[in-house]
Image (cartoon, rainbow, N blue to C red; front, side, top):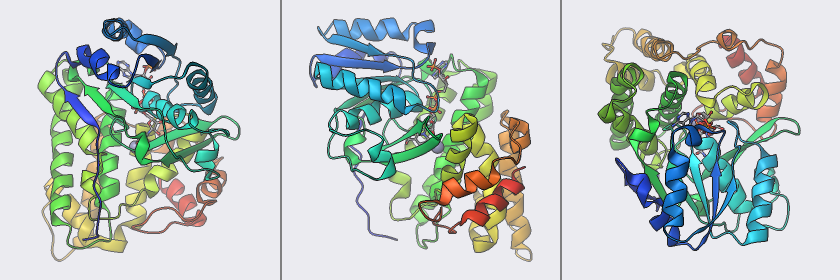
Length: 387
Ligand code: NZQ
Ligand code: ZN
């Protein structure tokens, strides 16, 4: 097991009606609040009104910036940075999913920086501080509500890039599973896929003697698998929604990475796809993860056989571990299909036209992944496996 430091200071407020505490939580940071949200789902659900009321009850001065798109754009981030600088914003309140939260994080960092916020994503500058962030989560998926990372797309060249800093972890995150009842089935499934991918990225490690975190990963995966079809069939099933919502946070709050080095190659490859084709991140992962697995499983057949056995109850064939390993990959792929995800690029109407370009862009800062280091040519082969 590797040495590690685990620090995740985000205060989680979980359960029914918890959004009513938003104003109170926000008030601890000051009066000037930038309310940041997406394309309108929070207005349709009535959440917007509830949040504004909760803020006003605390005499907050509310500034607004809506319109965050999935795969959030740097142009809107720049607008947010300007508002923060002009108004002296005390807290950015992100109400929505990963895209809104990531946009809020980039604004938060940009507001404390003289130069252009994209510098953080190219590595030209490092974050040195940020405006505090609060979250009301409406889709369990990206895990951004307690992560230190943000992923932003630059329309100039369609680069989708990530960066992280400890100061970007939200101060508080309000998680009410009831707020997820309005999610369309496709978004619910994208979220489920993403949180599973966050666990799988950590699971496929070269580190030995990480039994506790292996088993925590397996428990989280099994819980998500057990509840996925229930939330799709019964969108207002509180208990199933609650399991999925909490699993989404646990998947990405870094507890499951303690003592081990995760892979993250599939995520980086996926970002190339959603950067160019603007598909949902979860859908891209449902396509890329099984292809990545097929490409790398021989690197550690035992680990893949363990995954098949402990997560999917595939019986271990000691005479043919490779068969067991492949069965686990097949089970994962079948599961993604069963929840309505595409598992081939063709199902998402993506052809081979940008394979070389995506492979080049994806590896221009060095090889991807840690379990197996992937070069440009490897990415092209993975894209072919995903066709
Ligand atoms: O914009 P609105 O109208 O709110 O609609 C959203 C959006 O269209 C809708 N939605 C959200 N909550 C809803 C709802 N619709 C009805 N009822 C609700 N309760 O869902 C759509 C998708 O929202 P989005 O925020 O894009 O989804 P998600 O949370 O999956 O975030 C995806 C983004 O997060 C990044 C991804 O790359 C992608 O850009 N990631 C961020 C990470 C991080 N910061 O740690 C890690 C992840 O691996 C991921 O890369
Ligand atoms: Zn993800």
